[in-house]
Image 1 (cartoon, rainbow, N blue to C red):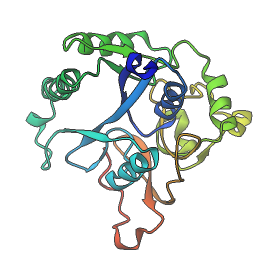
Image 2: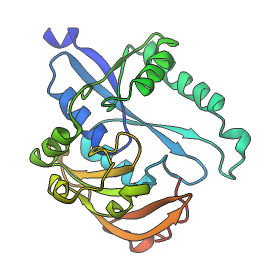
Image 3: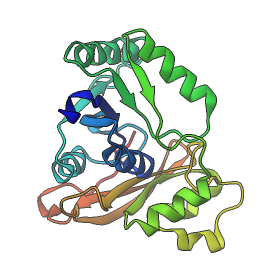
Length: 242
């Protein structure tokens, strides 16, 4: 009977460290029941938006988490800018969220830590479809979170980095890096300095076996391609990053 009062929550899932930590918190919180994941995908590139992670790895991640995954496909396969407007993104997001709301899910969780403008934006979008945001990491110290991420047994690779964070591209993220951390870079990349792919940790039933591919520069960022460990049949190019 106690489970009947738990709030159903959809996890906004990037596949990175903040999403993973937020999900970990939610799964240990008796107030919530995580019912699924939602990831924004670039239709042109077939990868997780901003993170540049292959769809195949995202699917394997969801399988290891044991949660259903919905993909919000953004843009068009041919890169038509008319299909990649924020208005189109908002329309597609609203359609997915409205369907989740109709099925009884009233909350969407995010891994945001301290950017108030981002949280306010999310809350406005959710309010339009009668939903509320949940922010398990909100207000916490970024350095403490990175230490907790490592202590709890999470493992991740940096898949995208820019500016002062560029030397982190392709590295295995760990609090040990704090001893020589790039100046001006938030330890959790809260300003978008870097993005990650989590391949192991306490929320996974099994690790997601990956291998590092090449690192390239695209649109002012460095992207490190990650491939499934059994990648022999896959192209190794990283030209299709978003």
